[in-house]
Length: 223
Image 1 (cartoon, rainbow, N blue to C red):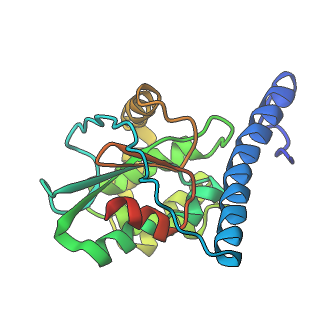
Image 2 (tube, rainbow, N blue to C red; image 1 turned 180 degrees about the horizontal axis):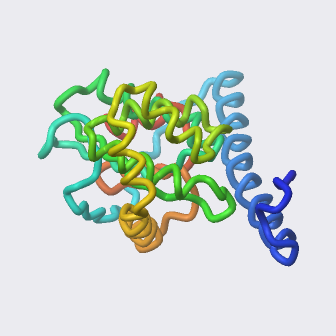
């Protein structure tokens, strides 16, 4: 694991390296397990007679100011906890648009912020995204950040505002003020309260779907 010089204190490098390794290993373990199971199913005739046990539900409460797509009060609410620097989050970043394309007003898809501590640019990127939410362009900016999630310095965050066609001065003032830090921290506290330990994590009517799962797997839970 490579670290940008000067970004992490020398006395913290070992700690962060171990945490990153654990996070990546957890993501990869889930993918390997699923791929192995899928390979067995394709190789042998499988007839599953045991019903999938119902997962415990989590009552994810919303503050009402989160960005969302779909219809308020829809039968199914999907809440995603994610962040903009994470490569796994980038992989799953189109799921929200796919959900709305397939289900329309039958669902409400909500985005909440969970910047991981070892992604040093993720928190500020989330603050910037909330600034754009104030200007009515959250999801356009969301897409731009994920498309360029290796370029999230402040100068980049400002550049993307112009590209999505919003007020640069208003954005600059918002970001400089730091007023959205509390909102990001609130989402992080919510995530921890609901047992979220990695990003992305989806809650489909309270049922947790953890990791950058393929869209079809998320769709099964929605269905």
